Length: 102
Length: 474
Image 1 (tube, each protein chain N blue to C red):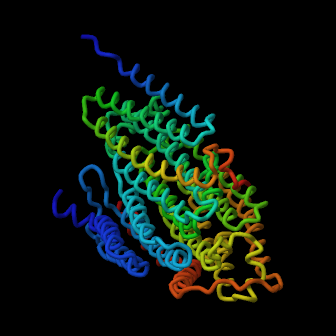
Image 2: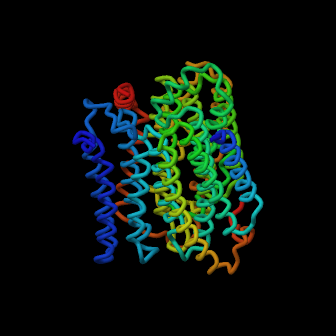
Image 3: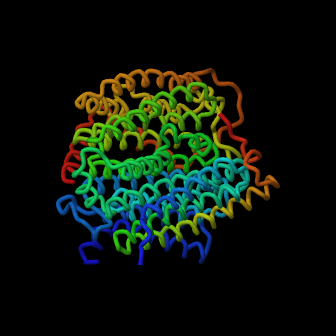
């Protein structure tokens, strides 16, 4: 059986990470920005799993579970804040939520 | 986990216990004062259980390294947290009905910072950082009725998550190349190279980006002024001291372990970041009219200064970083303490006009503010001066002439905007709405901070000896 070289896995993770990053920077809707950040975090998680399988250690997968947990906590707080913002502004456009400048 | 391990982690365990107790106390009955006392007691008990210096260093598994550096900074963080807690009571008492959860988040954030300073593994690094960040999201947006608090909260959330993704990807790349996530193991791996492989180099770069966001150094500083402005004043004090200090200590530990400054690329990156932070922080502060934003830009510049000692990365450099952190903590807490005391229930005292004639209407408070501003500017007889002197010494001893000269030039530029606030306070007092009365806890905290600032400025030797003893052990 041919193993998949680990470079492929890392390159895939790198591409996902880049897509997430570009998307955070160009999106103007807060929910989409949150989703994009999740993509970046999961790309990092994928890289950990690939690295863990290269070294045949469980560490990579353990780290992935921690990342998932953290991402879930972050999203729950994020959505709560987004709800608040929507109540106040009636929009999720980041340009509207930009009253502080300087 | 052995008995000894538990004893060494007791301060941290006490903090988690305190958070749970606070949560249960809220469930039974909401009483702001009771929760506040419980929080302060938790911090005091945790301080009491700090390990004795003679028994250091001690490794708890692979995750934690309880050494002099860690214990000293845990102590500093807990003392700073105590000061912030004392300020928070008066602040939230007049502004928010549901105050209990703030203290729970507050203890957890402190816990995260304390974990960061003793972590010796990527997992504990990451978890400590996230416990700190996720608690901070809630704290920043705590005053729900205020217009800008949600905006500050969501900005911090998106950028903090964005930067943790960078940090994690960097860690993953380093792990992919080395097969090890402990700082100890990495130090063995890194010492084998003269030139870093591209994969590891990218990883280190991404970790620096992630940590740079937390330290709010240029070019990762964009969130800082907005978050400081939107967050409640005590929370802004927390971010500018504890969150940044813990990240700095962690970076020191990481880069000492991998001996990162042997590699010219790393050295160049940090030199550029340091110069950019000093220059940009000071120049942007010049045209601000908002005191909280001035303090934000000033904290950016201060971390630029601090990186000079960080780059030196020898024994003197680590001492200088620790001394600087103590002086910076006391100064920033004092400055934000004054902002907290002067704040109206509807909005924080952030405009320069709020301070006009303060010297005549509230002389004691104005004196405190003048001392902290002078310490920020690095005027002799304050802790800020000695700390800056220490940075210069460590920069000169490693021949960082460019950085040293820029540090001096920037200190002079910085003087301008600090003195401007002082000048506003000297203005003649006009008739104004009454300023809010303060609480005893606030004044006691401010008094202690000012005494410390002057004391460390006049006779720093005691503190230097303590740092030398502790940091020398590790």
